[in-house]
Each structure stands twice: as C-alpha cells, then as structure tokens.
Image (cartoon, rainbow, N blue to C red):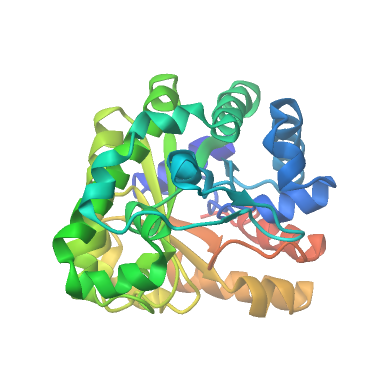
Length: 346
C-alpha cells in the first residue's frame, strides 16, 4: 500500500496513485487551536512545535505536513529589525509584521540576506521542520512554508505602495522580487540539502484580484521560476498556492515550473483541468468558509465528490481547500473532507 507521501508525489508527476491525494494547504491556525496552544507559545519552543505537528498530522491525515504555517512574516522581520520592524502576535490568526521598511533600491542594497538565520523564530521553525521530517517524513510529505517572492517583496515595501510601484517603479519591483527569491532560496538551502523533498509557497499578493496577467508574467512568474528551477536542480518539488481568481492566466502556472498549483475556490476547476492536465499537477478547490466552515458534513462530502468527479478522476489532481482553513472549522467537516479522497480508489 502506498504511503501518503508516495501518493502525493505520484500526483506531482501527473500520475495516478491508488487513491485520490488529499491535503490542507498550511493548516497552521487550525492545528494550533486544536492542539490548544498559540503562535507565541510555539515560537520559542521547538519541542512543542514538533509535537504539535506530529500529533495534528495523525489527526488530520493530510498527505502533506506544513511546518511553519502562519510564521511566514518572520522572514521579513528578520531583515527588518535594524529598520525598526518587528512582529505583533494576535489573539487569533498568524503573527503580523509591524512595519514596512523598504522604499527604494538603495534600501535593498542595505539588506543582509544572512540576517534571516539570526532570527530565533526562523531557527525554531527550521529546526522543527527537520525534526518532523525525521519523525514522520517516511509516511507524510513534510514541507516548510513561505510567502512567494512577489508577496514577500510586498511585505517589505507595503502592499498598497508595491501595487502602485508596479506602474511607477517597475525596475524597483523586479529587483525587490528577485532579492526575495534569492532570500528564500538561501532559507531553504540547508533544509533541502538535509533531505527536505518539497518547498511550499503561498503567493496571495499575486492574486488575480490584485494583478493582471501581464503584471503576473513580468513581476511574479520570474521569482517563482527561479525558486522552482533551483528546487528542481536539488531534486525537490515546489508547491504553489495563489488566492483569488486566476482563471485568466492558467498557462502561466506552467511557466512557473512549480510541481503543483493549488487553486482558490474562485477558479473554474474544469477549465483548470482542461488547460493543465498532462502538463502540470493541480489541486483544488473546496471553499474553506462557504463549504468547510458553514456546510454540514453531508454537504461537505457532496462538494468533495463533485470536485473529484470534475477534476480528479484521471490523475495529477489533489483534493485541497481553496485556501488555508479557518481555525473554527468543525473537525467532523475536516474529517469527511479527507475521508472522501482517502476512500476514493481510481
């Protein structure tokens, strides 16, 4: 019998495993709430973070385990400390960056990429990633999460200003995105060299609701391509999720070179299959709030079955929510979401 890890790796290659692969995307907020802890408590406690990841992996039963989900802003704050940037913990939800601190190319040249390894929380998450892989990496595909280069660049600069700069300072935007791609490659290098088999990228600021296909091609795709080419050269996979409706740029996901793209619920999954099947693995796209949070377990089951019927019967497909899931989703709904795929034989 194939392990969850083998099942999802088969889908990345475009093939059919023994059943439909299934995973959350991220899942940090839900897992932390379910485990009964907080982001702040875990930030300085690798032991507890490891246990949380292992315990929740066995409870949730996703094929992929995402270490560091919700801790992505620390990659920016690590370089922003000397500019007065920090992190603010919230009662519910992922920790926030307190300040944007890059407004020009001159500031980019003052940033020190290796500062990322001086941040204690980044070190905790990296340490946890390798320890979780050691404990359950034979069974599950263990990865660590990050923002995509375009989203991380927007975190450094400030989203509103960054959007304006795509028109007013295009060269600055390109340089910032390229800097962030290099920073993320530096972050993942020791992990991939240590045997990490996949990197997991969320690029919400590259959403179809925020940038058009032309901007996507110019500003977001090159950084993703740089990361996925690097990962591929090391024998590692790249998982990508972008929020919003990206149905008008489906071919561009092939250009990113990523192993799989996980779609938002706004994307027509039948159209996505039409464009990507045989060229790239893809996943989607059960609505996390409208369906997983607000529907009954029976209704969740029906939506999952319909999604697989439309997009998942020929392989290369992974059943995934349309985005990260709210921490308040009932376990019964999460369980049935996984059960549908775990019991679905090709």
